[in-house]
Length: 121
Image 1 (cartoon, one colour):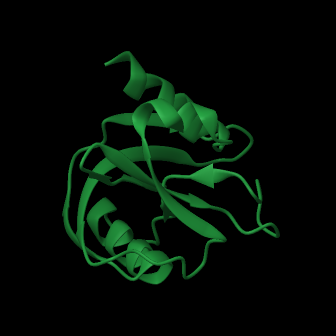
Image 2: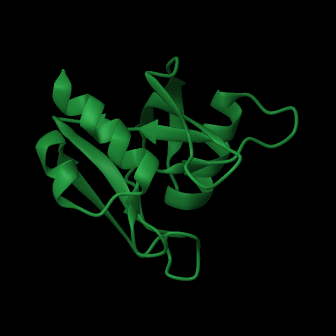
């Protein structure tokens, strides 16, 4: 899985999961599963266009990877540069938050662990 770390002017984009999905109502970095034969950039481009209506310019190497607790997926947190104004197409809400605020919202378990590493730097 790819989790897009989209940072603009010191704030990070997070999205609130629909209630009917696993971990519904919690916040996450946007992204999703890689389809068969798909690379990280292709997956990020597809997922972010579907979920947020933005286009991906670049996808960096993973800055943090973690086995998603309770699932078979490895989550790769990658810096992603996008163009366009994100809108919540599949999420309940989206918001820009500063790094220190990430731990004040209810993040998915893997996303919370990643946020902890952001604050250590």
